[in-house]
Image (cartoon, rainbow, N blue to C red; front, side):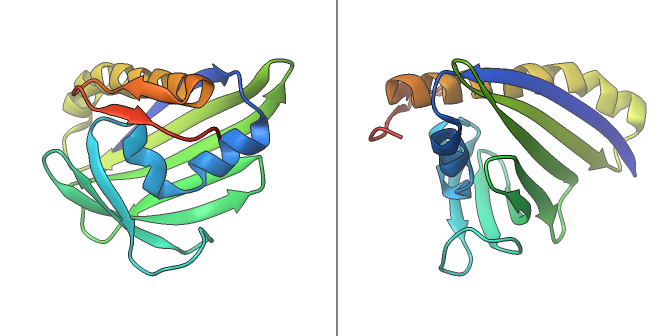
Length: 157
């Protein structure tokens, strides 16, 4: 299995606790990631380590698990069960003078040969960065228009 790492950073002008709380609920992912259609918890309850979710993407579906949750510091999700591309996503949070800083690190693992996987890395990183800017817009203004045309509005975070 081959691996690539994608790193992005984003400043969001909103309180750290509010940003963290919004992102700690995986069912909010489709509100800022246009490629996700739905994310549903497999078992009811609050987000806790070990919680599993089924996410439907534009062309496939995956199961993910909340593998780490450290209040206002870290959220980690990992793909589980069979998946063509496996991933682990870690979001590290810190407070800034203007709000919140997120360091987003995604590890992708696949049986695709590493040279091919690396070819897609830049495209994937740009798509992830575009999604993070939609997250920023959503949390700062309570509305955004996703790349596929969906308009998303939330109550104040």
